Structures are given as C-alpha cells and as structure tokens.
Image (cartoon, rainbow, N blue to C red; front, side, top):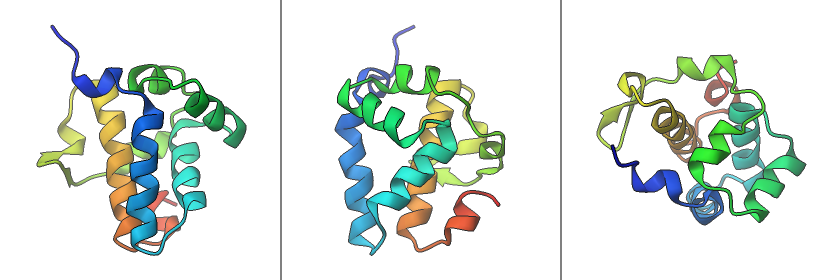
Length: 116
C-alpha cells in the first residue's frame, strides 16, 4: 500500500502555514509551538532541531518523545473527515494537530485547545 503524500513531506515545509494561519487570526508562533510541544512531547530545542533537519511528517511523529494522552479527546471534522474515526495512526496524529491549529485560529482559549 502506498503511503499518503503528506507522510513524506517535511514538517518544516508545512510549519510556516500553521504559523501564518494562526497569525492571520491574531494568534502567535509561540502558541503554535506550545500546541506542537504539548501534542508531541518535543522540547522547543528539539522541535527546532526537527525543523532544521527537514524531518518528514511520518518520522516527526514516530520520533515524538511522548504523544500527549489527552490528544485522544480531540474530536471534530478536519478536511471532511472525523478525526476520531481515522484509523491510520500517523494520519490521525497529523489531523489532531491540524484540528488544534484550526481551533487556535478560530479563537479558542489555549486551555480548551490543550484539553485541560
């Protein structure tokens, strides 16, 4: 079975789009980074290292130090698909992140986005 194209895309190539989406709605790069660190367990230094290495999405999530257990509380539709129904683990992680960035851009409070 062929992997989805996004698996081989570098995380660094999509990262600026996350930031632009947030900043267009008055949010910050720091908030985007906080969401990514919360989701993956990367430190800020490790996140920057992954960006510098141009790590692809698949490796980015496979090497994540600790995927946050509360990420499974993320529900809703992204790209026309319910995130909680995505069976492929890496795709589900990518869509969890997409959903949180969408919530940030829609003005949700960080406590709600981070499922606190």
